[in-house]
Structure formats: structure tokens, C-alpha cells
Image (cartoon, rainbow, N blue to C red):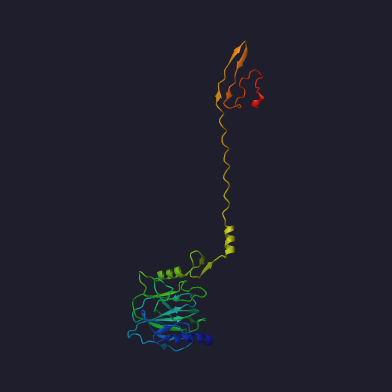
Length: 283
């Protein structure tokens, strides 16, 4: 048997359906028309309750397609998409933990469609059988789009919990899933790790940790540029040819001196002295 508290939660489902409208999940919620391509036929609060008929539906009836909401397979509808003819029934069976079937649109998967169906939250924490459920009749061959609007602890729609009826080659179930995850899932800047078929973990570093990581991962300081080679020594100043003459075996001559080799005016008019000597003014 289902616990009394859980029966009380499921009992709200029977109060949400009035005159073909699906009421908001919270008390006093505004009525939401369910005339967009579908008609609600019957509801069941689960735990051995009887089915309650809401609408007669159309005379034409076809097959009944069973869809599991959540449960042991995680944040998914099983199957995630179906093909249905006009008149076919789709029965949603709510399993753990607490999900909705909410109608949306292909461009904006995780936003409730104006005038669309919303089951409200249907808690079944322990996968109690039979589960709360409802049946709806498909009234169109146009594509129909649905999602779970649970956001605790994370967005179920953002994790890809969406469902479609009669998707097309241009508007596929895969594209619908990708749009839901892109608009409401993990941000592109987060680091994620996902195992095949598993959950996704988002790792967000605190500001202090991020700063430490930045410091730890900082690139090494750039090597000092090689010391520039010393400029080549200035070329020796050009030499000026000296002149001289000999007389009686003695030489009277001038040396070959570089231009600017001596201070200006040094040695002018000087004669004699020891070989190699210079006046003090040139020192």
C-alpha cells in the first residue's frame, strides 16, 4: 500500500482535472486548456485507485501507447518519442521521483506552451505500483512536444528529459533534445564529465580555488633575452702619412699618426726628445 502522505499528494491529481481543463499544480492554480492537439480522457491517482473519466474523446479510437515518466532509467521518458495516429491514446505512467508532462514548442523546449497541457507534479518517490497516470487522445498528426518542468535539484528538461509525438525529418527528437540541453543545460564554460548513459557532473571552482589554479598553472616567466653583443670596436682612425728627411745619417721625420689620436693642438711645433715620448699635455 502507498503511504498516506504520498496518497495525499497523488490525490491532488484528481482535483486538477475539471471540465477538460488541467489545473495548476499548486492550490488555486489557473486552469490551462488542453485543446492543443490532444484531449485528456482519464486520470488515475495510483496506489490502486480507479480511473476517473474526464472527457469522452472522439468516437474513433486506436491503440494505447504506454510511456513511463522517470523511474529507474533516470531523467527520461520511455520511450522518448512515439508515432501516433489521430484517435490513438497515450498513457503516461509517473514513476520516481517527481515529474510533470508539460506541453511546449519545438523552438523553446523547456518553456510551457500557452494553452498547452500541464500535468502538474506527480510524486511517486518509491516507484509504487500502480503509479499515478493519465490518458490523452491524439487529435492531430502534427508534431507535439513535451518536457518535465522539475528544476530540483537541477533542470530535468536541461538534462534532456523531453518527449515528442510525431516528430518530422525537419524537426527531430534528437534536435529537440539538443535544443533543451543547449538552452537549459550545463553552461559551455563549465567542465563536464559524462559516462555513456550516465549523468553529467559540473565542476565549478570557487574564486579562491580558481585564483590558486591560475597561479599554479601560470606559464613560466619568459627567459631573459640574450645579452646583446658588445658593439664592434670602432675602426681604427685612418692614418695620415708622415714625412721626413735624413741629413748626415740623422732622421728628421714625423710618425704615422691616427687622426684624432692626440688631443687637439698636442705636439704642434714639438721637436727632439726620446723616441716614443710625448709631451704631458698629450697624456
